[in-house]
Length: 471
Image 1: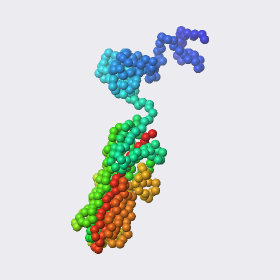
Image 2: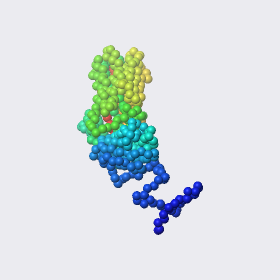
Image 3: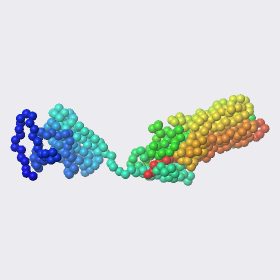
Image 4: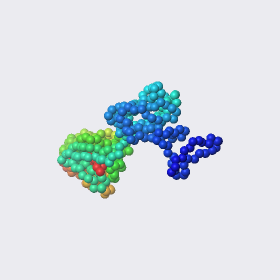
């Protein structure tokens, strides 16, 4: 093609000069300059010249600045209205070695002190400066601090210690592992994920259930014990069916792990009292993982020969056969509540059945009549690990933290246990222990005047379960 030179332009008002036809480009030769076309707020990024030491910028250019070798400065050109310069952290090093931006002479940056330098010291930072006038000088019109790097996601790598404890892959194909602690040990995280959300774990922490009292032939029945506290939080990255007590909605319930060893405490069940009087039971013990603890279940109320009231705890103990008072649940208080109150015993003198202990899912029950015992409150069901716990109303869930039954008087029927809580026995039989590793409260026994002493029973030990994403 021949070269076309334009030597003059018709300056008549309304006239138009067209260079090139449709679909062709107009190119300025190397070294040529242009004026009057203006810029559109963009710069030409100098990708072929990464800056590693002090330099003077040119209007219309953007620079990637690599401070890995040490801090340096960029000197801005003499300002003229519309001049534009951009700088960008090359590889996320401005936080360790800063970049100084120095205006020309006594010019200002963002209306500040004449000649004052601006320091960029945030990882991944990039700024675009446009010169306005002598009052403001160079104005920063764009500022980003994006430093996230592209990487293949990693996941938690962990192990467990303790002879009773296990770590298995979840059978529901949810890319999760389940650490189950039936006794003390450590949950040791050797490495964490590079995706913050993957470091949130799901957990279930159940404390030890309360114990019940021993007694002698005193025409009475002892109260059932409360279940150990039940606390569960389900992380969104570990899908399963959680209990209605899922605490994820309360941020203080969430646990984000770090690369360290987390000691695990699994609470023992409260001891049962020996036969004879006065031998009250004991509260269950606390279970703990990281910042979260569940309280032990309250002991059942007893008479021996003075009143020994039911205790408060994760769930409260039930009142005894001649005493009205019940123990309070959710003590100390947390949200969602970790348990419920025990049932109130009957206050009719003589021939009185006892109340049941509270459970994670409901309060303990009061006897329906003077000769009857009462069931403990039901526990809570979860699918965090369906190989432990006890069956409940939903066959797909494992239940924990049921309250112990209160004993009947005379020949009334035995009271069934619920969700790990002991069955209420009697008359003239010792109590039934709560189920191991469910936090179930123990049941009580009862006697009448013609029979001898019977023993109380021990609460079920607790459990800690941790579920996390591993791939």
